[in-house]
Image (cartoon, rainbow, N blue to C red):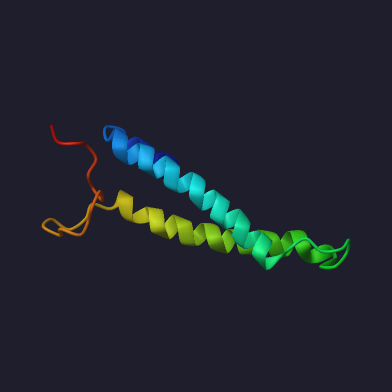
Length: 93
């Protein structure tokens, strides 16, 4: 989805710049949330299921992010002044 958005909005350099910044920050937030849920503890504290539990949590966080990004691939309603950059594939000259 991220690659689709980059392609779709390729003629809007400011949007692309801001998307990349937002995505880098989201990755940091995702990792921080994972550490918050499963902080470093002694060896064996969480048992052998830790990798599975982490993967399930990362999947849930990623699915939420995909839903957040999905709106940029759907053209917003015309006249909705609160759409911001949604559907703004090219910068008007």
